[in-house]
Image (cartoon, rainbow, N blue to C red; front, side, top):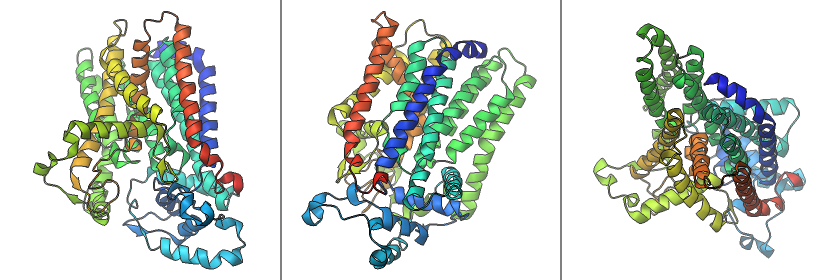
Length: 498
């Protein structure tokens, strides 16, 4: 498997490098076009990045740092939260940074006092993203970035992450489908153009697909080799640890990975002795599960629960519902289940940014994302061409398990709380329907998606024509994203106006 992958993968590196370039440019342009601070809690994520960059690691729910509050007051845009009609003459006020400091000092000081009295409900989130982004922020300081430009520098970390994600997707799909041009080009292409606006803000979810993408790649290498390699197991394990230390919503991947390991041991026992498999299996378990157990133990000692989530739950005034009440949730109705799927999958594709109080979306594209994702995933997982190998069929089923496990976890969270007066989730909308929360599944999802699309197009004999249709679809998605996000380019609060 490995040699075939190495031999055939070399032919595609030039177009893949082009996709990496396109992805990097796209994320860079949108990250400087959208002003600060987005409606997806960007100010709170920035607060943690700044604290970590200063060597301060929160040990309880903390208020916003006054240093953070100063940035928020000076550089925030209300375009995410209000419409122009809210202001005199139907026009947003001039950005604070354009006023002389002597004229704006009182306003800034008042804003700092207000913001720094608010608690950051994300204070106890897993630390990996904030450690990396904090180090990146320190590098920006060292390079001379300051003020609003320093804020955008922190966002530019996402350029590196999306490029890494495209490359990992290429290496993964090349390993699974050596010689299949549509898969090898299609999955990285869709990774590069996916219009997920999480990558345009300071946000911990951007790291999840990179970490689990790497874990998924090395799990495949580790599990499907005839003789398990210890180094692959260690890399897979450490990448899995990284995934969990990015976001608590990635926890189901521990169970999925363990199931994959059990499957691997069953395979290896047919051809290998116990002594030959015990070391690589033990190293995978030690590297992939032992650090997570230590993290759980630390949280239990310091915060009273293994995920350190109870403080946030209490702060938001959520209450745990008895299991007997879970069945009364609207998700167990046809309309409720459809609403949950629709809102989750469309935000999985295009994100959750608001503009003038309205979600940045195109209804026709949302319908396409919703329907095509369901159809292509099912086809990719089950209705696979006979020429696919058993290995490829197994990978597709594993990919489906990855996606479904995260989706089900969000459903369990949705039904297990009473949300009180919280605005999202809420009593009237009791769903965790944010696609970014399951973004760790991105590469497995796109493998299924492109595989399903290939099956739908199998009646077209010309491979060039099939790839052409794939390219037209990618261009259509890209154009729709430009149209949707166009208002941000004219904002007086973005980087173009600093």
